[in-house]
Length: 164
Image (cartoon, rainbow, N blue to C red; front, side, top):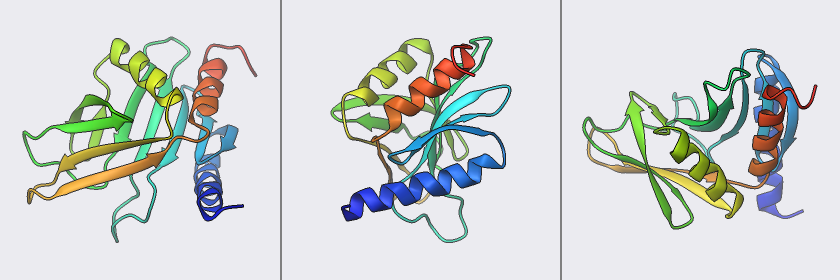
């Protein structure tokens, strides 16, 4: 097992253990977990690397609800709060997606973007979120995508009632 695979397995396990207290794990692998939280299902992961001391880790997730009000909604908890008025971009391979931000959170901009994000996640191995913090310093939250497609499919299938 390579160091990268070992690190991803540790991340998946940590995410699964943390999430288990708040939901049912449907799938965990490659750094991603699919979680049924009752009123919603999500495919979630933590950013690669260690976060800043005293701050919660950066997270990314795709959310689904049985009523389909959220169907593939992307959201992230950023490692730093972006500078007011600055843009935060999600980059998957060479594709860039502008996100909506508030505080240390960022979201997709609607259904069409969410479909494009999920399609992009299926075709590459990494994604990152980039922005500038209040001091103007650039920050990048990096994510591996191994296991993402399976986690997304499991979360969507559970909320669609296709798996129990």
